[in-house]
Length: 323
Ligand code: UDP
Image (cartoon, rainbow, N blue to C red; front, side, top):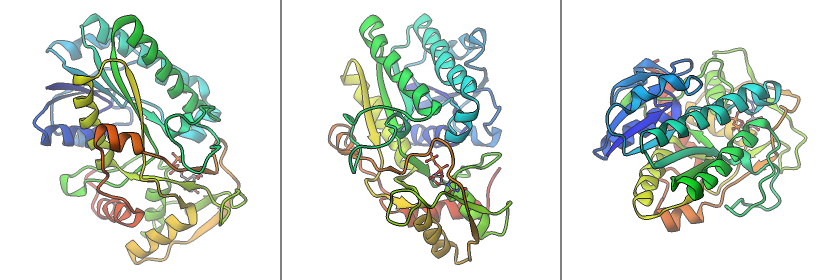
């Protein structure tokens, strides 16, 4: 198949391009290159376009597109609290522009990057697809709005879609020359590894007064290549299944911020100094997935189940980043 990967120059998108190419698909990347990396566009041509400028999108559909994977998004919880307009603009309006372009060009299959942030504060130990959706930050709210749009589009236009709700994406394919590189970096694992390498302004632990065993937030870390694999399975799924579907993607294991720092210390063999800082706005205390549906229905089975092997791949990238 020929897949249009929107946001394919970014972190999860570039790993999806790698997985698509390994599986024998053809890839075209659409990216505005504001946060993407030219060096990460390795598996197909780049169309320089922007989902916020609808008139730029048609060029990406010059060749017949069999399905779209949509990774273009703003995805920082804290930033979404301070700049919600940017989040609703990019994540909702931008996605509508892309959906309209797909409709114009007769493309009826979409894999959409959604997030655990659609759930808000969990009311059960693990979060399955039926868990109540009450996002506590604009990022999660913007993604939930798109999930609703996709359900309506299935009814109205016959759009087939799979929304994949990532828990915490981490790790890298360093041997393939791609990995996580954000400026500024806000995510825990890369920031812990920076601290291990003696780089950056110093690691902060945001909040030690959460209702968790050690007081720090608990997250479910999932390897970016396992996420990419779920996208391939979602493509297959849409060949068979009409409608709008949603799957949670995580390992089902929660690690606290302090446990992640300890794992990063072991992996890197370096001390990781940190200071305690106030809570970051918009952070729920615990997010741990039940991915039973993805396992049973998509046949998804993550290769990286524990956080240490995930951090090992992130450390390999950190020691020799290609960009
Ligand atoms: N976190 C932290 N220090 C950092 C970055 C993150 O303490 O430098 C915490 C953050 O508050 C959250 C967890 O680590 O509880 C995971 O945050 P991250 O930004 O990696 O992912 P998110 O859960 O926001 O998608």
